[in-house]
Amino acid sequence: MREHNLLEDLVAVSPGMEIWWDSSPVIFANWCAKMLAKAEPGDQDNLKRQFKRMYDKENPETQLFRGVTTNPPLSLQAIKDDPPRWQKVAAELLKENDGLDKESLFWLLYKEVVKQGSDMFLPLFEASGHKQGFLSGQVDPRSSFDRDAMLKQAEEIHAVNPNVMVKCPGTKQGYELIEELTSRGIATNNTLSFVLPQFMDCARTVKRGLETAKRNGVDLSHWRSVITDMEARYGDLGGLREFGKEQGIELTEGDVRLAELAIFKKAYRLLKEGGYPSKMLSCSLRVGPTVDGKQRLWHLEEKAGADVVVTCPPSLIDEVINLSDIQDIKFEANRIDVDPPKEVMDKLMRIPYFERAYTEDGYTRDEYNSLPPLVKTAEQFSKATNEMVEFAATCVSGACIAEPSVS
Image (cartoon, rainbow, N blue to C red; front, side, top):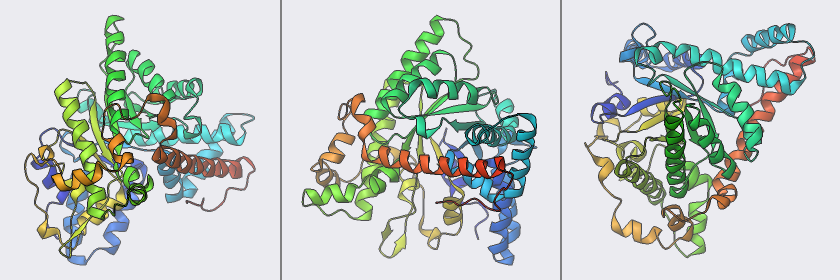
């Protein structure tokens, strides 16, 4: 096993890049223990050193992880990771708050997951002058099309900790929310976003909100904006291959990954050229494709040199650390500026689903709510939220289950 993992190599050639932990930080210790348990004995000391460099409470300014993304499925995983811990938390909340129903207890539990996770990154938040160490807490995905409900939730999430960034969906109502929160100096993360029109809409929306905040003398010392590109959810969950087949075009795994990267790279370039205050955030990454019989990491390799956020779930970090062909992965400085091959782009541009996603005005704001990957992701997130509500229901009834199910 190499002394430094590939994420550390990627940051070394990418000034300004931030690696974030894509899960609740409360599971980090248990994840490390599981990784060590399955590692070869000769690799364990190396892994311990890597884990210490990933998250270091005593020296946060040097740690690899510069922030955190969470969502309802990840919060549910945090509860699944240690059910007795959260059953105890639920019991305390029920004792402190008379008459809680399952929805009310769920919301308090959710905010407690956000609180405990963001507490772990407060040292970095302070050490960085309030510029890093944010944790994204998402509004209820079941309210993705209800601006007023999301605003109330956002206010409560924001109040949890000074380093909590409110995660807002890329719906029509979500962008209205982002402008309002930005005008108040509240940090935001635009999630459920997949296509260039959404990214540019968000960038312009944040710029307007920021101008309003400055005119009104709002304190912006705790403010940041990131725009999330849920990359593989666009290509895989959104059905790019199927849309290609409708045009008589067969797409390989590599074509799909390059399509996702083309959209991300164009957004990165346009934000940079336009001087927008938001930073692109790359998530929903995949290992692949396989080239000449060897695994590649195009979602990481093609971002070398980028001043962006890359958020990585524990499962991806596991794959990256234990990649079978790790010796073949080399990060080229400024790879972010290299466009996909022309023959691939020509093929992709014949697919309306991609052509619209790659064009700044390919979708209107009114059309975002019906985007296939948005609809499907919102449904998945809502299902996970309902499962967390059911966990709360068992606690309200006094019969907490031993382990909540995860879909």
